Image (tube, rainbow, N blue to C red):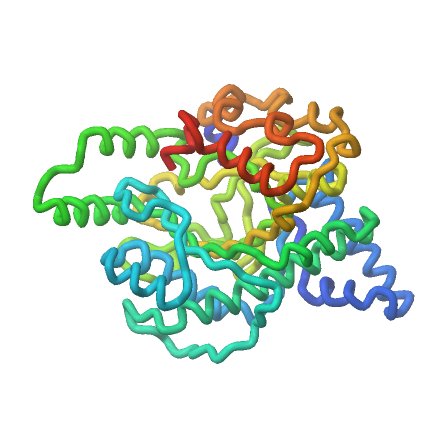
Length: 401
């Protein structure tokens, strides 16, 4: 069995935390003895999943009210990505959305649409749940905000569970003080989508062929591990993601070819193994970011991860909705408490196994170690700026994303 086959066979099914158990935990102090015992079980399993010996992620299941929102919102990602640029600009402005990727680049592998969610935002809204005609985005902004606020509140609930085990209440307090979260609707392009974008660009250039330089960038990017998104750590506190939806280039129906397979790939340092993450339908993934790692003094561990393209299924695109929870920009980090020993144990310094698809050397070139980006007394704004610079600035491989 070669390395690629071995990696493909390694599947991780994360710990599943039901919404009912998460709500039970919020009533911990007023619960019966039986319920308090259940809450202790919840805490123990959450920390095993998110702590230093776990994979750094878990799933929240049983959030029934979100399923319809997910099915309505996620297909809009592909529609927006392939929309006429002038119409897309108008729609994004109407729904108070922006983008944090260069949408004018026809060689991009990802299209992302973003909204800032403040903590005064409410999840209550007048949402038209009728089926939408192709190209109709009348519920875009409302669905974006409603699902984003719901996921933000799930993240605050997870922070509460972690704080009980860590002590001090630093995670929930930090999230509430930040007053904002960032939501992204993300479309990972199929091969057909990229052909459509290049063809549209050629038409916009009055039949002129795209430059050979851009063509080379596309070929190199597509060949590099065949990834939609390169290896990286999220640098906030928590990242919450919907179970992704895979769409065929020929329809906007959810594909059954990759059922429950997220194509999120992680490195698990304790097991020294790469895993593909398998998720229950309509669940939410909670991932640990580097700030949670820092604030918890290593009691939580951030997750090194990437997003893979499904092999031999180039006609499929991947749609997901993500909420990033982060500290306030003026949050100060104390590295003296977050020991240098922990920094030196960064998994990038460990013996990451070489496979046919990925090597330790490749990851070290792409992912800057935490110890090179964090200094004592640094604010989150400084840490965010330095992290972005080292990932995407200069000649970093991810700058071509």
